[in-house]
Amino acid sequence: MNGLGNEIVVVDMRQAPKPIAADEARAVAKGAPYDQLMALYPPRATGIAASVRIYNNDGSESGACGNGMRCIADLMFRETGQDAVTFETKAGLINCWKADNLITVDMGVPRFAWDQIPLAEEFRDTRAIELQIGPIDAPILHSPSAVNMGNPHVVFWVDDVDAYDLARVGSLLEHHPIFPERANITLAKVVSREHLKIRTWERGAGLTKACGSAACAAAVSAARTRRTGRKVTVTLPGGDLFIDWRERDDHVLMTGPVEHEFEGRFDAGLFAVEARP
Image (cartoon, rainbow, N blue to C red; front, side, top):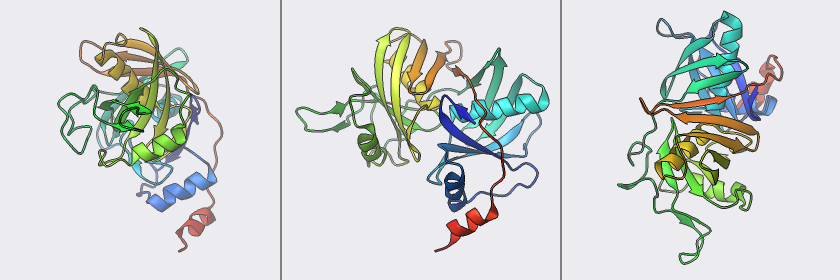
């Protein structure tokens, strides 16, 4: 499946639940290239559609994936006939619902404290942290906003999101010592008070056509720094997401489409090859 080109592989482990090892997740990426893998497990409480574990294509686990949540929500809607579901994830309970042909995901409340993002050192104001690439007197990128949207994000404000080699810059910054759990790196341009344009390097996955949690991080950071209001359209390389940082409870709602590509089964030999030393 995909959400705006963010490639998602969904594996249904509800009938035969077992953990997925990092090398197995990497093997899946060889058989069906993906940005994130969503593994569905039996629900652990009444009212929960499924427990979910999220993997990046390097085998690491992620706390959140907005585009992936829309994908598995769509599967559940088709399976159950319902129009609202709740999932359990590493980042907490996630509610999803549909309207017309779009799906909304409640991404929860953003976290701004330096030790919640987390950062390796204290910053009292994470709207603009001290981080830059390039010469001290003429940095290429500097002073990003930082936020946790289920996973760590930093957002650099630029005039042109396509004017930078994000593959190189993103790889360097993802592993910067200031991010003890690594980070997602986003370049964001303010088009208007209601519109942002972004590109993202995803932690553990690399360049992507769309990252739902990054769109949320950019929208929240833009509103927090008074660049926009709390409702914006975020344009990503794969298309548009609609973000509403709801005032009454600070929850971030992300709305967008889902697309099915194909279904199949993995050859067991794929995992045997990956396991060889």
